[in-house]
Image 1 (cartoon, rainbow, N blue to C red):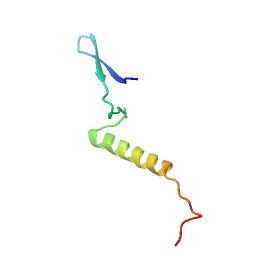
Image 2: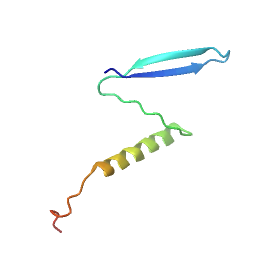
Image 3: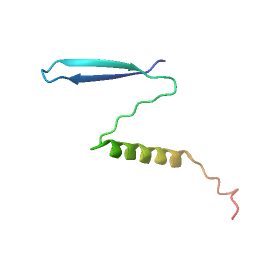
Length: 65
């Protein structure tokens, strides 16, 4: 199924505009609340690191030290 990002913005006169962007097969959209672009990137980086750690399974029975 095709995914779309739908953005709605309102100009200074109060007129709303809707913009629809089709996502490519290898593209995802993520929305975060942040004070700056740098903060937004840090939030995403932290989330990706958390997801990686959460998805990584350690088989401690087969680990040798």
